Image 1: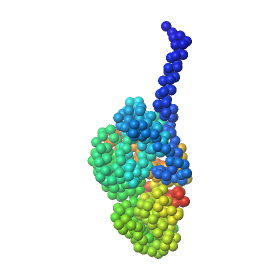
Image 2: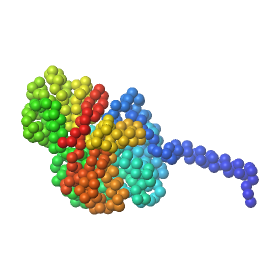
Image 3: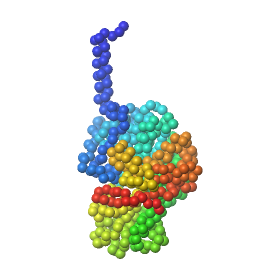
Image 4: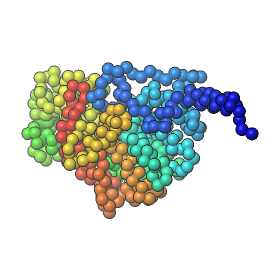
Length: 470
């Protein structure tokens, strides 16, 4: 028997009330039908070294219920396999903090996992807490953007991509523990990481032994080439970086360079030593200034005796040294390695760092460069999705993830097959043209002839000066 008019009205009213209650308890539902929300630049502590406005207030933290924030609740729900609940909680966390890349990634994972179908899994390892946290987050941004693009296109070979991540705290000891956990999971097919050379050198032997392909998108120590055939690097090493810096300084007719080096730091010492070898072969003269003594920055040589200044430390070191150099009256150009390219340079050096140049793997202001033909397109795509430009760690990590995804597309879906695919790039198969330039691996998994971008510090941001090849 059919329903009466009153019965139909009552049934409709009940359905509307239930739908209204569901949307009330799932405020992200309508957004979940579209792309994830576009972040707006966050004031102060942002992983994006960009010229975007910093005048907007920091987004308010999401309200806590039962002692948990939506972010914490979403992470617990995700770990418990409750993807439906995690999507709602993580959506609230992202609304409160649009640059919460961990929540963005986990929510993307939930959308991939919710249908209950097989997925491809990639791991990210890097510092997600502590003083170098921003760099681990930058790696995750790049990998997640590649994941997002693949999943929005329907996945790869019928499967969506999930990205899980581990915090190595930029520590060699913790990196080993992370590698042990990752390699024990048979579902893991590849790892993007680690961030710094110390962690990569410590964890690399475990990935090699377990046969898990690892691609570091940021570590530059030359010794990484000796870790084995399952370890790859998509950025140039410190010898190439030293060649790029020496060549740039020499071409500008600077024949004497004062090099600030931290003898206790492997990165600083290695970059300084390699620079000196290349520069002196060209005919230049190096004045060495060990600058760190018990944590204090000291100048023992006269900067006015040099045509150029090179700082081989971190951005905080470079900022302090730039102030001290300018106080001596020296107007010599100041340069630094990739560790100097950071938004933190401006807080450390103020007006003294204006005009300072540093090497970078990529910069979003590169235009019309045959060496980086995809740079401009990627910059536009990334900013449209994330609300701010990508920095070089994000771009190189995007390239690293894209290589793994391309392996999936070509049907290479085991650890061994992915390793063989990567090893063939630039050898038995064509080089891959990434957003950070052409990628071709040698027999040691080292990228060959990768370009560097020399960036110049302006008032509160950087701009690409030129693209150079060592």
